[in-house]
Length: 195
Image (cartoon, rainbow, N blue to C red; front, side, top):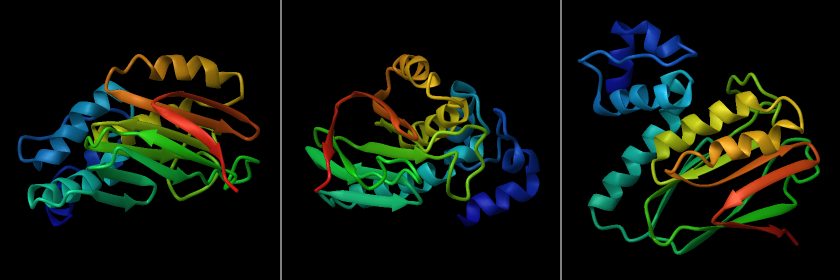
């Protein structure tokens, strides 16, 4: 965190840009990855910062031989060592909110489960989705894609179209889109009613 703070004092554009932004040579290694992936996802690099910190912390623990790891950072989760993981879904005012769980197939791999919302929370969004969740083995990419696709969901009819676009990212394991009473999902997950 301190390394990023220092870097942002010399590269203000990286901090504020809402579009892809090239990092400077002096950037910390994770900021360089955030920058590279911002060009792949069409959002500013700081949209991946929570995923980056989760990934760094998770990999540190993994390097110390911890067999099962879950790190949650404001809706962006690093997971390692689980065959399957069940997570609850909060989607603001949507009727699906706190009524369903996702059971995600992970096969003990390192994985990011990242979410973004256009209807609640403090993050800036240009879309109206109550929730977009993206699962990828790259946590930074999952975070950036969650923001990017949340920006694109303005109406229920966008869900099918954007799910097909998200499927084009071969690094993505699965995804979930919710806009009020409309839901779309694909990939290695099961949606289960919460009792």
